[in-house]
Image 1 (cartoon, rainbow, N blue to C red):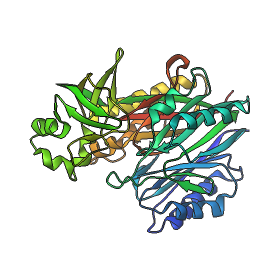
Image 2 (image 1 turned 180 degrees about the vertical axis):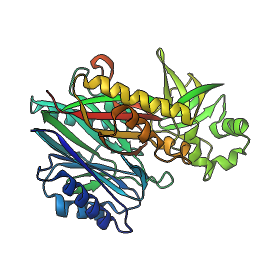
Image 3 (image 1 turned 120 degrees about the vertical axis):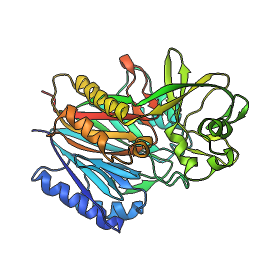
Length: 385
């Protein structure tokens, strides 16, 4: 049975109506095949339960997972205030899993997810969406043992000021949770990732960091350091739009031989940076700056990696999870990252995705998954030969 994919996108004032229209479009395109898995990206401006009410009324009991984002993505580009739904059907099975306690313990959530995956030896891969504001994604990744099931996903996003975000599965919605789908059968997943941010020469020492809050750089409040670099008074960084635009200027942090990207979610009133990954005191950090050209290159690189990971399997569908910083950077060219991915995968490959507050990708050589900021992750699906 051939792997088929259909993607529906709808914009409406009402979340239920947007959900209804999106699933109606997708079902019409899918034809007679019964959906084996649904992946949904919904605007955080909609009420989550209204969206699910509309989708569930037509989709029935088909496994469904989803997350909120300020805009969704499809082969046609970027869609603000929308619902995008991808339906997959074919000779595979998907099992949806819901973990409402993710924000309380990433480690415990990882253990439960691994137990669910091990319950059926035919499970081959997992995709998941977790809360981007609450919960420890690094802890989750570290608790997934090397060599276990291949996992990839992203952190849901939304209003950076209120932290309004949600995750969805079947007829359940919530915050602080994780929604996952375990995949088995005649389906293969290939993942690629890259980012378009480069060091510009400014170097700092992290002198005080507590949990998810980066307090001081070089002994001064983080906002004062950025104020000196960019010319705006330090107090202005605690208010929109600068409090959110700080994500455009992430830090490259040394981790072993690698330089990993860590980006603020926002600047707090006391001048500290609210992150969603901890940064150790005493390490060096480098200011990173992105550009459209480097992001286009990164999107193509991620798509090429995903193709390589699929091996001899032809891609049919790609889930594209893009950091919310890309939406800010590419505001004058919305959706350009989608077209860069299409240049590599081909126009015939269906795309769906959205903007996230972090990306989770498989570790190298079977290692534990990696938690990333500021990247684009291309998760390509194809039919096993």
